[in-house]
Length: 442
Image (cartoon, rainbow, N blue to C red; front, side, top):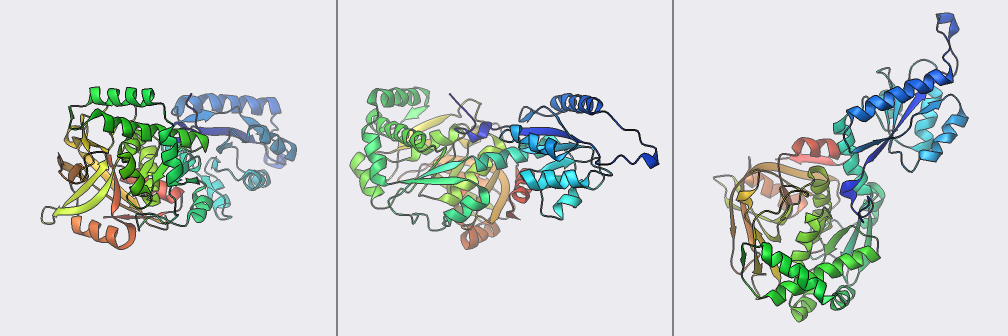
């Protein structure tokens, strides 16, 4: 059964309305005291309106009235479900309750009727916003999804085969509040050897029946689906919902050769479910993939970049990890074919005709090895084709400045980029601000 922890893409933002009553009613100014019952009714009416206004990404909780420290203490009952407090009443005589609410629970506060709540709190390094809308909810949902992500890293050594990968995982865990677990290459393949072969064959047959073309033997596809099922089993065991596999290097490469399989198909199937996955132990690619999947609710294409034509401002992305659900996690698969890995006769590689997606516009991005900067460009898919004796998927994208993007990627970010259908430059700019990452647009 799906739940938010297993599938962070499904998280909701818990909004707790709070009506703050002034500590002292300034009667000399002619104001009349309001009963607690009247205040509660106001909160109930506001919550009802909010439920109608916000998308299904929000869960509006029952409102609370705050008159005293005792009322603040009572908010603990909903603390696990609360992601943000929506404040009604933030004017004269309410400052101490607002400040204590923000400091005690360290949740964002939103609202306040335009009387200075955000600068009051933000100047004290407390998170606050002027208004509550669906864009802010969506951004907070992505941040929460990142915080609820735990990546399973398959690696016998903690140095990734992708040299430009993020490497200070403890710092990333502290700053982004995500997590990581490690299993060895040997443990991963031992798990693969224990997979139910009937289940692996059933999945292989389902993929074969849906493919436009199949260019190699069914037994190798079954080996790849066995690897996928092994990954899922270990992720469940360690409470993980993302995956990075340190492939293409010893000892993993030796085990790939022995078992005649590669992790490419497993990574494709993970991304198609909204479970971010990357190859070569590339944590930067994994985090970029998380950001794009959680923002777009679409699968992605991870690959190496090049420039087939500088004059035409074309970049190429080449790899064997294209998404089948790039039109949307809940949309039908794109047309695809199954090949061997390329340089060998085994290892399932998926080819997707990216010209057949609903959109041609794409966003391409990558975070740097410190996960403090995000490189972004957008462009249009103009060509998609399979290549021989190499990673199968090749896609050409026309961008504003191919040479500039490649130079910045190679200099400070890395060659593995992630592409998603659609223009998400605005959302990524806003998200980066929310999680304190600098954005560089090319």
